[in-house]
Image (cartoon, rainbow, N blue to C red):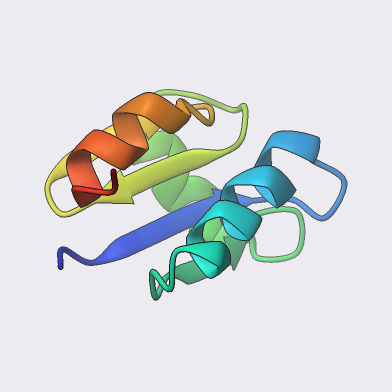
Length: 78
């Protein structure tokens, strides 16, 4: 399974939905709280060009927002 990283904030509904989806499907992930971690916020902006969350990185693919069908496809979740 490819590595999964999510850049999120504590108040983001879509971030919570994505993390719940990963947990329900036993997908290990690394969560970076960009509200508290300025270095990770800069990293997210440099990677995505976006200030909005979530930014999800699966392997070498990036998804802006929680696009569940795309996430499922990249993780081969049926």
